[in-house]
Length: 171
Image 1: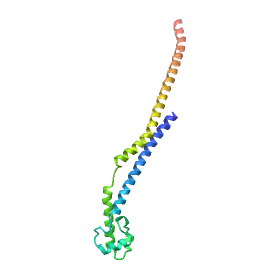
Image 2 (image 1 turned 180 degrees about the vertical axis):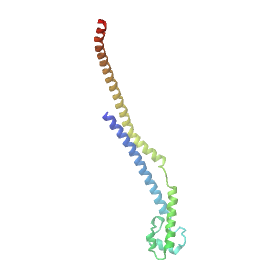
Image 3 (image 1 turned 30 degrees about the vertical axis):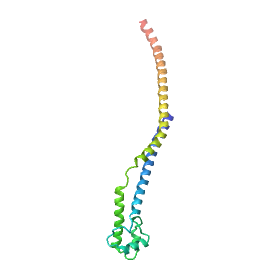
Image 4 (image 1 turned 90 degrees about the vertical axis):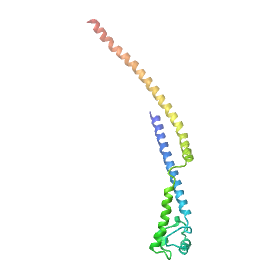
């Protein structure tokens, strides 16, 4: 009873733990992909409407060297960047981000997913085997109890039938 319930709960918890670890690993992979794409899209190599080499130098001198560094308010504070140019720089960084999001992984690489499955399968297997053993033992005990009470029920039936049979013989 209680041991089987504990084992089932532990198995369910492992399934949830595996799903959580898998989701966390995928999120980390996606974040790395996004950061890499944003940091590799440099201001120096960018085509930004209304922003030529001199304004690009101003961006870079103010610490904005890649799409990852773009912040609307930081750009706005730089001399030569009015609302139109600020929007152009932000739109460029946003475009880089959108393209990165469109290409980021939607699943873990097969080898990483397999390693994760193997890790949890190794933890589930002994629990599943013990659960099978415990359930088998419970079935055996239940069958023994049923057999014992069936024999006792038969004995009671025989005892109850004896007076009836005697009464029927007398009539």
